[in-house]
Figure (cartoon, rainbow, N blue to C red):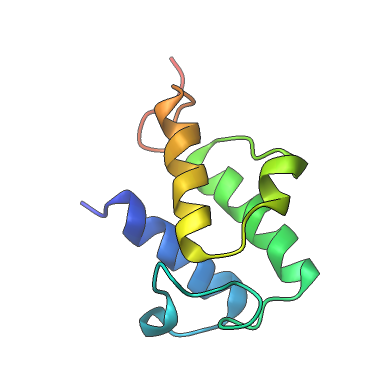
Length: 89
C-alpha cells in the first residue's frame, strides 16, 4: 500500500511536472521545484481531491516546502477528515 508521503510526493511531482527524485522534504516549492502561483493553487486542489480534505487559504499561504505540505496534509488527515482510503459512511 502506498503511504501518505508517497501519495503527497506523487501529487506534487505530477502537478509541478518534476521527477519524483526531486521531491525531498527540504525542497522548496518555488525555488527548488519551480512552482508558480498557479502551480501552488493546483497542487492544493489536487491534494484536497486526493485526500478528501480542505486546505484553507491561510494554510496554503504557509506551504513553502514539501515538509510543510506533508505536515498540512497529515494534520488534516489526523483531525479526522476522511481520506480517499476511508470514504465517509
